Length: 299
Ligand code: A3P
Image 1: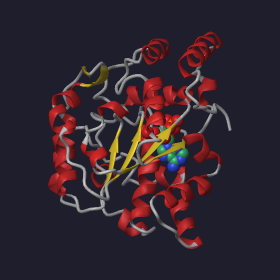
Image 2: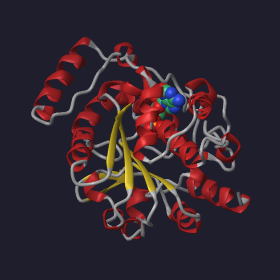
Image 3: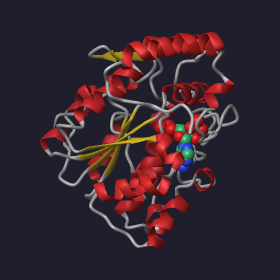
């Protein structure tokens, strides 16, 4: 991969405009809002594959799985470039769009956009998308540590403050409830495979096979094992191509928290106060009732 592009991505992130903005009522990073017209007019291609999610739901895990499936399980090929180069983050900035536009087909693209903000060309091209969803309690905890570590994001201040902002739907990429239910409803009309983080933790082989079938692939036992090994938490945490260790502390300060932090279900129990848990469960009930969606907060 062209070192100039890597340098350009780094530069873009080093100089990422601080602060937040809004597109159609959805809270987004100012940097995303600044490039919004270009993002919305992005031209999808036949054969593109998208990994979509609310932040901190296992996107990087799924993106590595998708890339390995596309590369027929060839681990060497999957190491051809840093994770955020080989799977461009659609709405992040001009450079990721530039990388995406110059990539050969089939491309794997990452987005955190809620369904209503997806560029229309993805629907026109009937692109296959894998949506990965995670229970909101663990998602919130993971996002809290990410906010503290990612120096381009506003300071989350206290956990209590972060908890309220999450419930208000004001964190970057908006309201978790709208996000997961919006993509859930859309799966009847579009080629969307909806996967749960908790299911992947419970049985990663079963979920990997679902994704393979969705993409029309069937691999030998050896290849399946190789993919599972390479995408295990331990292997990904140790993999400099995917663990974000290439970023300087001025972008991702991993002395605060590592990107590959815990990779478990249930860490919320170490963070939610009893009172917060009651408030959260009430909100969850109100907002998710009748959605048909069910999340597990333990496995
Ligand atoms: P934690 O902070 O709870 O550890 P995203 O990629 O959407 O930002 O999600 C990041 C979360 O997914 C982090 O959660 C990270 O540790 C977890 N994760 C990444 N790769 C994983 C893997 N291979 N297995 C389990 N969890 C993984």
